[in-house]
Length: 86
Image (tube, rainbow, N blue to C red; front, side, top):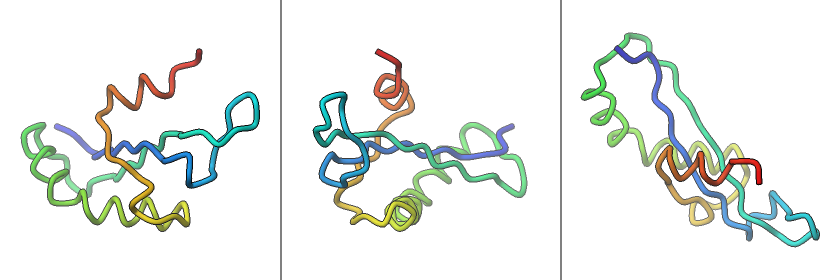
């Protein structure tokens, strides 16, 4: 049983939230997690994630003070790859 739902986003370099080592605008990643009141099965997690994805995207954009068009939903694997230390 799962107790939380996580969403993963790639934030466009045009959001101006990150820079590369040379000071150029860079994309970055964001993880947004929600704790559930009642644990649910793995199968139910995917159903709930689908129901919540639009609201979660709007919440993430509002939290970063950016337009939703600057956020892209990514998989956990893409998030992990994008946040690995080089």
